[in-house]
Amino acid sequence: MKSPIQEYLERLHARYAELRDGAVATYIPELAKANPEWFGICVATTDGHIYEVGDTQQHFTIQSISKPFTYGLALEDRGRDAVLTKIGVEPTGDAFNSISLAPGTGCPLNPMINAGAIVAASLVAGHSPDDKLSRLLGVYSLYAGRPLSLDHAVYESEQATGHRNRAIGHMLRNFDILSEDPESALNLYFRQCSVSVDCRDLSIMAATLANGGLNPLTGERAVRTEFVEDILSVMTTCGMYDYAGQWLYSVGMPAKSGVAGGVLVVLPGQFGIGVFSPRLDSRGNSVRGVQVCTSLSRDLQLHFLRVARSSRSAIRVQYSLAGVRSKRRRSEREENILREIGDCAWVYELQGDFLLSAVEPVVRTIVEHRAVLDVAVLDLKRVTQIAEPAARILGELLKSLQERDKQLVFVTGQGHSRFLRFLEEQNTAMGGPLRLVMFSDSDAALEWCENRLLARRSDGWAAPTPVALAQHEFCRGLDRQALAHLEGLFEHRRFDRGEYIVRKGDAAEEIYLLMSGEVSVMVALADGRLKRLSTLSAGMTFGELAIVDRTARSADVRADKPVECYVLSAAALERLGDTHPTIKVVLLQNMLRNAHQMVSRLNQEVATLAS
Image 1 (tube, rainbow, N blue to C red):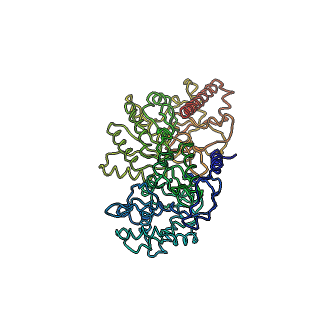
Image 2 (cartoon, one colour):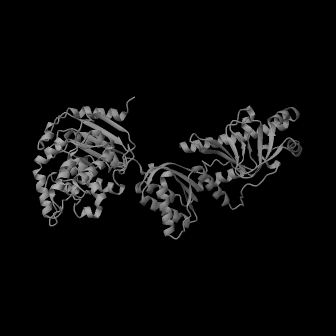
């Protein structure tokens, strides 16, 4: 089955393959040899998937599409302030080869025109011209995810016909924007324009920018995240030259074109687009490339100023403890309390990139519930990144809640070390007033919240204590005489903390009545981690379900604290049917009641999470 996205791109390619407006560039003789019918479209997502149609592996030279990448390299080598003293960021509204220099200083107005690109090339660090070229090709290759090289025939053609660029270079030297012989910077600029790429390369290079500078296929970093914003900003305002305003209005995505027929487009956080078709319009932009990108933006609603989805989509699901609770089994009294006050604790499962726009609705939701809310859990396991402004706002929310005797709890994953470090630093800077409550597991966070709510009850709730046989759920409804008879059938056992009471696969021969302590029922996952299915405390039973049909044990049971149990063998339960059938009926009814309560709770949780 073909992807609908792939089918859409094929229809788009077929629609514009018949468009034959424009002409191949001829001012560089080698470019004039291109087949005007070459036409490819490629889309690369930020998680590394690629859709392509047409001549996506036809090689051509990158030309002016190189400019954003060299600009990024200059920013890394020299720093933002140093680069801004040499190259401005203002759009010109002029052609790519215009002589647009700031009055008085002689600085090029932006790095996307030839003058600015020549200066950017001069700022690339290196011990020699070959060293600079090697570094430049290395960075371009990181963006593309494969080794790139020069098309030497195009380079020689660029050198032979680049008189206007040489004039621009010498004018820059006149204003001391270039501090050395212009030929060195011009030579590197001619070479960068002659790098050979294909349409697939363009889409991956664009996707690398969309992915914050990290190549989505190789995982290698091409440019530091802090400079991606600078690169995309000048692409947005200047990347399409004197068509930039119309492009921003009609397409609304950062882009860069080249006179060999390539167009590179970035949709930050989502994907990169590469289009290749050599026929150019009067501004030097690919005719088909412009039309394809305009249709993509319109058809798929990609304009970056469009609100593509509700900001509340950062909240994947939300629920209170009244509907979903931890794997710890509670007594009937505790269950009643949590049903009554469970809406004082809410869990927000979040997803995606947690930028300022994503954190705002989360904070707003919590603030709106502040009157009844005692504790809020932010489950960040599906959050891919947390920007510093979002982290700062969450720290401020935590402080505000704690000032009102409320708590914000975080469930974090392996990729959130920077966020945790930021909160710790913020806490230290404030003198340590924040109580940071963090878990790596949402179930543990839920249990913490339950304990907090139960402990805050004014009617003297306390943690479970050892129970007598008459108080045990297994013996509910039995009179004193029945209890005395039943007690004679039990074996008394003790287990140390960490000791396994039941192992998965064991024969189901006994029922365990937990009289003191706690146990956890666990299963091993495929990666070796243990997952808790439930935690039981004094007054509860385990092992009873398997003994009914005598199947093998389906999970491990481990003592979390020193444990005392009464153990009833399957044979003793069987004999009760002959000697004291009434007692056995009561026991079976109690077992059925417990099973029904567990199923009802699971049904409630499923309904809550699905709503």
